[in-house]
Image 1 (cartoon, rainbow, N blue to C red):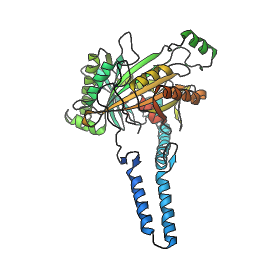
Image 2: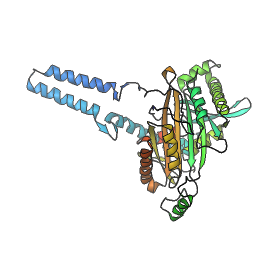
Image 3: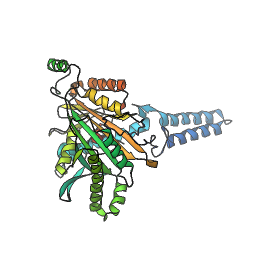
Length: 402
């Protein structure tokens, strides 16, 4: 996922943290700035080869120059907004994921419903008992997670109040933090969401609203994740093994719950059935049909879905965007903000937005959403070739897109 920097926002109700230092963009392993180390090495080798060939016969200079140009072309060529070799890797992963998805959906040994197995073949959800309460523990290739459903006070704000977000940010960057904490806001617009915006019924409904936001059903989840390395370390202090991981997760969930309650927000730790339902809801898996990942979209049931990575994200702009797009023809929206501890007590933020609409008008709706985002100040790019990855990251899993 992309790490974001942001300025301190004013007080309000926003779906992203508003306080505490925010990390500068993370340096990904093997990268310097926007370039891979391998690209810089290729550039240096090509320059050295050309320099050494100078003064030699013309044909040697020509051969070395041509080889260097081809090598640099392969290293620095762009395709669909990515480096050429990145595109090849994403394409290979996309094809492999599509094959695995089909196999997982047909498997009779799956531990989750077929549509969810198609989205996340590695996902397993177990149920444990902690102090007399049933707790659902999710496990996938990136680690383990537990989720809480949040109930907002009345009159309910659009998302978690800023004082609560500040408490959650403090938990994320405090001593012995979890690997990541995620806040997910899932919104279903008001009546007629399944009709196109140009439909007469929708037009009449919007006119009656006189410019006001369309009433919506909104669900909020907070998720705690441990990656494999952090899980091993946390489990070692709690008896080790998978039971130690479970105890560590419930302890982290307790810390997050204390922060929520301290901010006047009620919560409920989801059991296995609740966690399964929450992921399916946020991913748009409302039916029994097997979803399909395409290069530029995700198709599930009667809706098409587009997923975007959010960058340069001012919290108030995101809150404004959610209010703008919570209306027909969108059938649902899900925004997920992931917080992770960064060096020197800073906070690394990343975001994902999933929108759903009737498939025949999906591209048009996506253009409308991007236009609204540009006007409000939210920068976003579509996760082509990674739509299923993005859908899973937008669900209450605290997963990353990359």
